[in-house]
Image (cartoon, rainbow, N blue to C red; front, side):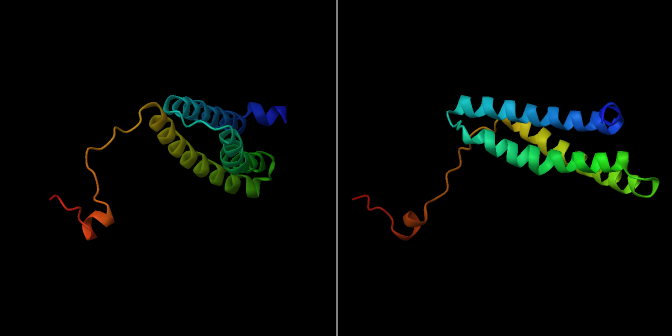
Length: 121
């Protein structure tokens, strides 16, 4: 296992865990700043990022490392594609946490106002 963690696949897995933690840290900061932090966000982070994304990609990396010559390229290619997609998604999330979009001045009409206008007399 130590040899895998020191390989390129292991380093990619460590980077994915680090990026997931950075997304959690910046998301927690943004939620605390906005006053919307809830403790169940920790469980959601573990379920969504770690168990839902990083663990399956880590499994593919391990299968690519420990698999035979016939299967290692297949698993490694899948892991690389998944890691690229995960990195793009998480980088966008981190950017959104650090630099939230400014509120829009445009206000949509409510459906009730269009059907039932308020009298001005």
